[in-house]
Image (tube, rainbow over all chains, first blue to last red; front, side):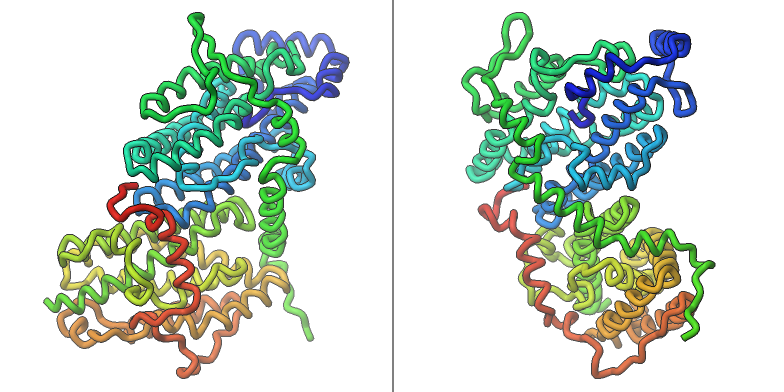
Length: 328
Length: 253
C-alpha cells in the first residue's frame, strides 16, 4: 500500500462515468494490452492520469514520512556497522521520495503542490508509518518486514503500464533488497541474542503484526473495484493476493527464529492460502483518517521542516546574479 | 616514533569525525529540500566511516580497544573532539557555516597528513582527502548561494558566521605533542593548519559578500582537546549509547 490502488467510492464512480474519445481510448488500451509502456508525452485518459498521480504521490509521501520513524534511531544505533547501514537505508528512502516526486511531476503536478497536499492532509501516505518505533527492535522489524511488504507491492507495480513509474520502481526494488538483508541480519542478531534482545524483538513483532496485515489494504470483498484500473495496468494484483504472498514469504522466516505472532488463528491452509484473525479494519480506517498513534506527529515534523527550510528554498530560487545590494 | 603523540592526534581526529557525523545525520528527514537531506546523509556516512577508520588504527596498531568500544563505551571526559562539532545542528544557516568552516580545515589537515611519516595515516589521508573534497565543494556552493540569495539568507549567514567563528577557531587548539609531531614529520601542527585555513576561506567568504569576523584570542573556545566539553556532548553521548547501555555489556548488536 505504498502507492495504494484502492479507490474511494467517488473515484470509482467517476472512473466508470468519465467519457473519453473512443478512438484514442481504443488505441491506448491496445498499446497497454501489447505490453507497451505509456510515456509522459503520450495521450492518456483523464482518469488514468489522475489515479497515477494519486498513487505515485502517495508512494512518494510514504517514502519521506517513512524516513521519520527510522531516522530517529540513526543517532542511537548501537555500533558502526548498524549506524552506517541505517543512515544509508534511510537516505535511500528519501532518495526514493525524490525519484517518485519526479515521476509524478511528469504527469503534471509539481513537487510543491504535492508537498502542500501532504501537509494539508489532502494526500495520504502509507498507514504503516503512523505507528511508533519504540525500541531498536522496531528498526529490525521495519527493515525486514515493512520493507519486505513494500517489495511485494512494488515488484508487482513495477510491471505496470506507466514508463516513468515502472523505471523508478525497478531501481527502488533493487535498493530495497539490500534493506531487506540488513533488516534480516538485525532480526537474526536480536533473535539469537540476550534475553532482553529476544524480548524487545517479540514485543516489536507483536505490535507490528496488525499494521503489516493492514499494509496491503482492506480485503478484496470490502474494496471498491475498478476493472479499468486492472485493464490499464495501474493495479496489477488484488490486496488479498499481495497479502498472501507476503505472509507466505515472511511468516516462516520469523517462526524459524522461535519468535511467535500474536494470532492463534494464523495458519496456512492446504490450498496455500493464509488464514488470520480479523486485524480490526475499523482501526485501519481510523488511522487512514488521521486518528493513528503518530499521524499528528509525522505531519508536524514535515510542517516544521517545510517552514524552517522556506528561507533556504527562497534563497536558492533567487539567482545570485540578480541580487542587488540595497543602497542604504 | 612517538606513540603517545600519534595516539593523541588520531583520537582527536576520530572524535571530531564521529561527533560531526552524528550531527550531520540529524538532518536526515528534515532538510530544507530533499536534495539536502541526501547530501547531509552522505556526509554523515563519510565522517562516521572516517572515525571508524581512525579508531581502527588505534586498535590495530596501538592496542587500544576496538572501534565500537572506543566510540560507544567511553565517558565524556575521554573524548577529545573540539566543542565546535558538539554544538546542536541549529538552523540550516548554522549547519552550513559549520560544515564550511570545519570541512575546509579537514581537507587541509588531511592534505598535510598525506606527507606524514606515519605511513598508515598518510595512506588513509590520501583516501579521505578525496572524499572531503566533495564535502568542501558542497559547502562552498551553499555558502555562496545562501550568502548571495535573499536579504534574509544573507543576514542569516553573516550572523551564523559571527556566532560560529570563535568556536571554529577552537578546532586548532594545540595538543600536548605539537613539537614531537612536527619534529618527527608526523603532522606539521595546528598553527600551520590554522594559517592555511585562514588563507583558504577568507577569499571565499569575501567573494560571497560576508565579512570575516575579527578574531579576539580571549574568545576562542578551547577545552575540547583536553576533555573539557560544552553542555551538549553529554546528552549526545547518552543518546548515542542508549541502545548499547540498555543491555548487558557482552550483548552483540
